[in-house]
Image (cartoon, rainbow, N blue to C red; front, side, top):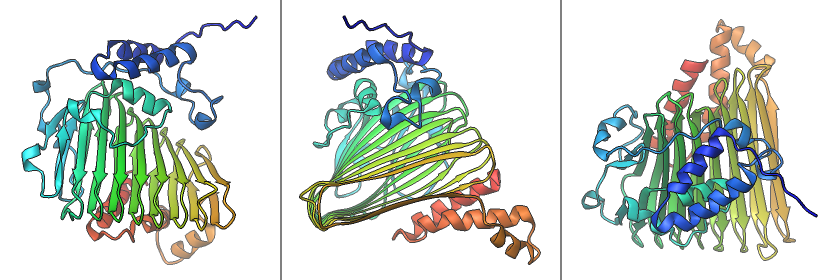
Length: 422
C-alpha cells in the first residue's frame, strides 16, 4: 500500500494557491494544473535537480497578492525612477499595468498587440514546463506580442520596461518574432523599489531564417525583490542572436534561458555579468539544445560576489545526434570577494553526435595578490586597486557586443554598482 502524506504548505505556497484559484478565462486550465502541482508537492526544493542550488520552497518566504486596484492608481510616472539606458521605443509596465507605448506609435517594421490579449500567442515557442513557466502560464495577465517584418531593420531598440513599486506580485508574458532577414534589438528592463515585491516574467522569442537580433535582459532590483524570469528561444537557419544579461540587486533572482537551435548555420552568443550583492541570491540557468548540423554557440559569464552573497550558474549544452559539426563553448568565471560569499557553478555537456567541438570551464577565485601588489606599488590605495581589478574583470564581457551605445551603457551600470558596493 502506497500512502502519501499531504504536505504542510508554506506561506508562499498558500499565497500562490490563492492567486491561481482566482485565475479566470483562457489561463484557467493552466492555473488549475499549476495549482494542483503546488498543492501536491509544493515549490521545488534541493531534491529537484534543476533547483538543487536554489531551494525555492525555503527561499521564497511569501507571495504578495497581485494588485486588484484600478489602473488609474498607476501611471507612467512610475517609470520615471528607471534611469535611461539607451534611446528606443518603449513599452512600459508598472506593476502589472501597461502604462507607456501604444500601437499607433510603433516604428515602421514593427507590429503587434499590447495588453491582456497579447499573451494568447507565443509564436509557436514551447514554454518550458518548469516551475517558472507553469506559474506564469496560470498567472500572467498582460504583456506584449510583437512581430518584426521580414527584411525590416529597426533603427532603435525596442525597450520592454517593467517596474514594481509596491509590495505586490507582477506576472507578465511577452512574445516576439523577428522575421526572415530582419534586424532588431530588444531590451528587457526590470526595476523595483526596496519593498518585498514578486516578479515573474516569461519571454518567448523566435528568430527566423537569416535574421539578426540582440536581446538584453537588464535587471536592477530592490533588496527585497524576488524575480523569476524565463527566456525561451527558437533559432532558425542562418540566424544570429546575441543574448546579454546584466543582473544587479534583488533578494532572490532566478533567470532561465532556454534556446533551441533549430536551423543550420545559426550562431548564438550569450554573455552575462552577475553582480551579487550582500545577502542576494542570484541564479542564472541556461540550456542550449543543438538540434541540427553546422551551428555555433559561445557562452561567457563573469560573476562578482562580495559580502554574504550567493550566486549560481547552471549551464547545459545538449548536442543531438544529427547536430554534427556543432561548435559550442561555455565559460563561467567568478570572483569571490569575502569568506562568506558563495558561488556554485554547474556546467554540463550532453553530446550524442560524433563530429563536434564542445568545451566548458568554470573558475572561482579571489583577486590575485600579485596584481593587487602591482597597483599598490604605484601608489593606488588598496580599495581603489581592488575596484580597478574587479571592473576590468567584468567589463570585458560587454566591450565587444557590436553596439557601442549599449556597450557604454552597460559598462556605466557596472561602474555605478562598483562605486556603490566597492
